[in-house]
Image (cartoon, rainbow, N blue to C red; front, side):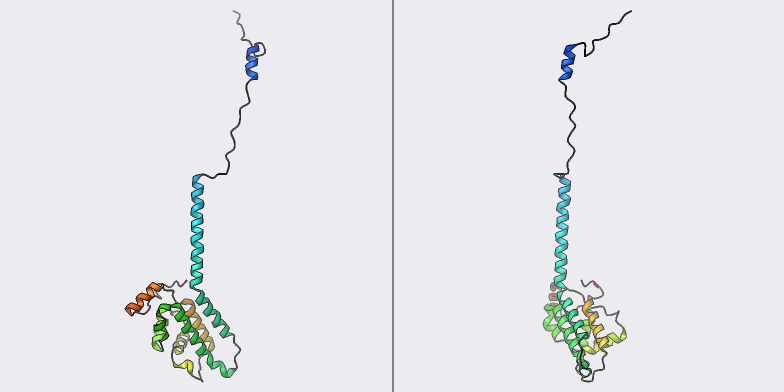
Length: 202
């Protein structure tokens, strides 16, 4: 039994004409990176917000601690002063004055109260506003002496190194307290007892 083969494209002009009209398939465009999808826009917005908050926090902290940095700078300058031996007895008074100024700058709401502190009361204030447990016995005794009459003595035997190290420790470690809390202290008459509960001063 003979079979008849179907006509090929070259044999049928109509098929050849139709094939000639066909175009090659067009590949889809590659997925571009722009514009980003909605999720990316959301991540960018969150990133900008976090960065802005971080910058604001750093600036606020830097401004808040400006007085602390200035006090440390002045204390360093005082420690490097080339004083004649007969004038080294002035170091305790100068350091104590700087310590009192720093105390007033740290707690401006309590300026009137802290400015009038003297002797044991002032030492108690320094103890309550900074955790002094890390000071040596000699440093603690020196700090106590600075709050009393010893700093005025023309024959002061206080070791300048102990004076500088004890003052530097308090300046670095005393806690920062919001002014709202300082107002609360002023109303209640309570002194700051937050050093051990909140050791983070920055």
